[in-house]
Figure 1 (cartoon, rainbow, N blue to C red):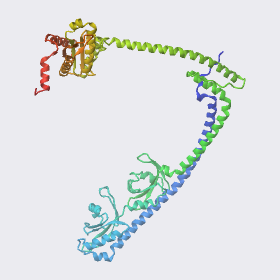
Figure 2: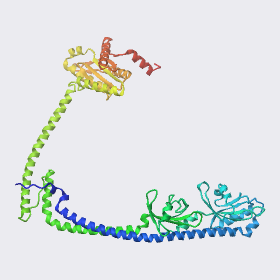
Figure 3: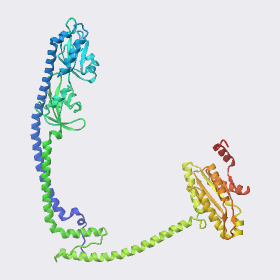
Length: 559
C-alpha cells in the first residue's frame, strides 16, 4: 500500500519539533507568569503603603508652608498699616492723595506677598488702588468694597479669584477706613511645587466642590477633583482613580484649615508606580531570556531527531504547491527513513520528466492559441472596416449610431449626421476606369479624415457615399463642418491612374440633427442630400433651413 503523507504533517505548527518546543515554551511561560504576578503584587502592595505615608505628609507640609506665607502676608499688611511714615502721608481728607498713593506704590514694589494695595473709606468705597495688578483690581471694585475690615478673604468676581488681606487704616477724616492687600496668587503654585512628593506630581488648592483654585503647574489639573472620595479614604491614605479624560492617577487630599479650602496632590499612575513598572520590566526581561533559552535547547535537541521527517514533510508540501525542482540529500542510513528518502527521490525524478513533457505540450498549445487570437482580432477588425478606404463600414456605423443615440438620450446633448455623396462619380469611373475610381475614393477618405474631429465617426456608407456622425454637435456646428468638407474637397486637384491630367471632384452633403427618432434622423439627412443634388451639387443642405438661419443670426447678430 503506497505511503500517503498525513494532511496534518503539511502544517508547520503541527510538526513534532514545533510541538515539543511549544510545550517547553508554554511550561516556562506559565511558570514565569505566576512568579511575575506574585512579585508585582507584592511590589504594588509595598509601594501603596509607601504612597499612603508619603503623599499625606507632603500635603501637610504644603499646607503649613502656604499658611505660613499667608500669615506672614497678614503680618506685613498689619505692619504697613502701623507705619508712621504712611500715616504722615495720609491727608485724612478721604481723597487718597498722591503722597499716600506714592508711598503705597513704593511699599508694594518691595512687598513679597502682595500684587496690589487698595484703600477703602469708611463707607467701604474704594478710594485708591496701586500695584502691578491695579488695572486688574479696579475692574473688580464692587466685590473689593465688601471686604471692609475682614482680615483674610477669598473673592470670586467674574469667576476670577482674589485672595486678599485687610487691616484698619485711617482713610477718612474721622479715622475710619481699611487697607486691603491683594496677595501674589501667582506664587502659590511655586510654594506648592516645593513640596511635591515626586517629580511629575501636581498639587492644587481646591474649594469645597473639588474645583481647582490654585495649582502647580497652574493648568496641570482639570477641575473638579473627586474631593469627597479623596477625603473618604482617610488622612493617611491615597486613592487610585480615573480622571475625566480617563487617565489613571493616584491622589490624596486634606483640609487646609482656612475657608473651605483643601490641599490635594495628583500623580499619574505610571509616575507613582514607576518602581512597579521598572520591576515588571526587569522580571519580563529575565522571563523572556529564560523562555528563549529553554526554547532554544528544546529546538536543538528535537531538531536532530526530526530533521529527516521535516525534510520529507516540507518536500511533500512543496510538491502539493506544484514545485518539482527539488530533491532530498540521500541519507547515510539504511533504516526506514533512509529507504523512504531514496524512494521519494526516485519519484521526484519521474515527476520532473512528466512535468517537462507537459510544459512542452503547454507551450505548443499557448502558441496556437495566440495565433488563433490574432486571427480572430484581424477578422473582427475586417468585419467592421471597409476594405478599400480603410474607414469603418456600414455595419460599424449602424452599431455606433445605436450607442450614440442611447448616450444622447441619457446626457441630453446634440448629435448631427452628415451624408456625403461624390458628384458625377459614375461618369468619372467609366471614363478613367475602376482602378482610378477606387484610388479616388481612397484619397477622398484620407482628405475627410484630415478635416473631421477625432471624436467624430467617419464611415463609408456604400458606393461613393460617406457618412459622418458628429457627437456633441448641433445644427450650426454640423453645417460649418459640412461646408469645410465641401470646400476642402472641391479645392483639391488629383492625378489619378495614368491619365496625368488633374482631376477635380465635388461633393454634395446633407445635414440633419437628431430630434429623438432614429428613422427620421437618417431620413432627414438623406432628404437634405437629395435637395443638395437637385440644387446643382457641390453644396450643403440641412433638414431645417429656417432653424439654421435663425441659429446663424443669433450667433452673428451683426452679420
